[in-house]
Image (tube, rainbow over all chains, first blue to last red; front, top):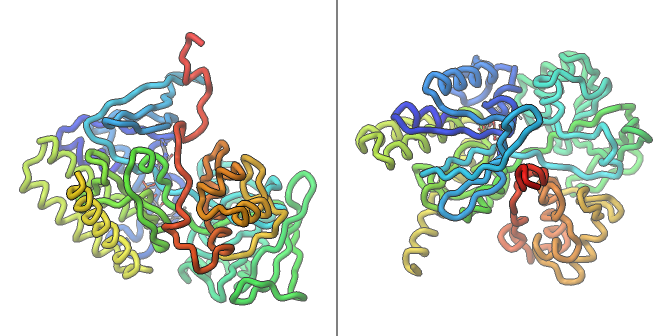
Length: 361
Length: 95
Ligand SMILES: Cc1cc2nc3c(=O)[nH]c(=O)nc-3n(C[C@H](O)[C@H](O)[C@H](O)COP(=O)(O)OP(=O)(O)OC[C@H]3O[C@@H](n4cnc5c(N)ncnc54)[C@H](O)[C@@H]3O)c2cc1C
């Protein structure tokens, strides 16, 4: 949406395609105030940022197709879209834009243990979508796996929604997320089991109990430390990885970086991938945060406007420079150095790849 | 996570492939995600490995020890459609 706003305000005709019923991605689930390195928006709720972006899109006349899925990108920037055309009605449409921005976000990492296929075992993000978007409580007695910010925030929100949090299991020796979020839970007496993992889950029709145990640094479990906890839901918050399917299919080159969640498309400083005309922004080019996603969207949007002749170069350069300046500030927070380095690596990899291709072609 | 997944635990839910079957494929010579996919169908189902890819990568890393890098292990190749689509939508009204 941020890319759409930048491009549309310069006069570019923009179409946004989103698989959800509402545009704005993760933001509409983030009812908590924003944290961390978010310079000027630290006190703003994600949902409000989403609303603001959506209003701006509407003002600028950006066309938005909801409940519509981009199922593939092919040669010459053609995109196949499963478009919702009415109640229970969908149609395949081939869209042929001049430029594409891929901002598909990330998907949740899975954890496997015997019993993980039982109903009631789900991603923490899925649980959050259920409570904050669909207003359905996934269960009454929840065990969360992972004490990163997602695990902590979702646990707290599940508690606010009326569930009991039986505990949070964290394999590392210490809590992984911010203390502000953790203390909200510990104040309520919710145990955070650091140095523990889930051994298995039992249940018939759905999960009814989880067995947890202490782990050694090499991940072997310590016999005799098992604990059985009665639960009806296990929420897994084991990190996210960039959703790169469309980019990969289009032929965009990827690199691996664990600080960005794994494989992600490489790009130049305008966020253009190794496939000319395809740009990438947000979590799909490295799992970070909402504000970095918004700035990357701006980079892509202004670059597109400039390359289509809607923005003169000088103006575009100034906008780009300002966005990079803000990104630099945003990447000073948690794991900032690692993220900065990983992002630089993507830019280098892009330059190297294009040079190599130039030599061959 | 770097946890050991027991042989009888399902890793790929779409195609019902266990960790043991993936290890067997590695013993038979698979050295990357695609090799495991060819031998077992893990990652070839509805979700195209969106869920199990990271776990297949993890098992490859554990089994191949020092010989494997993220680059050598690779990832699953995405195909159209990125998510399930009905035949009606694909074929249009004339089907
Ligand atoms: C629990 C939780 C708490 C968070 N808290 C914070 C916080 O406090 N502060 C902060 O800065 N960040 C926070 N974040 C992170 C932030 O939400 C993300 O970094 C941000 O939303 C990334 O934006 P994005 O546009 O890249 O991706 P997303 O918001 O994930 O949007 C991707 C969109 O693409 C759509 N899509 C994907 N594939 C397709 C397709 N093939 N066709 C059509 N549409 C498709 C999806 O439906 C989705 O709407 C949090 C995340 C979580 C999960």
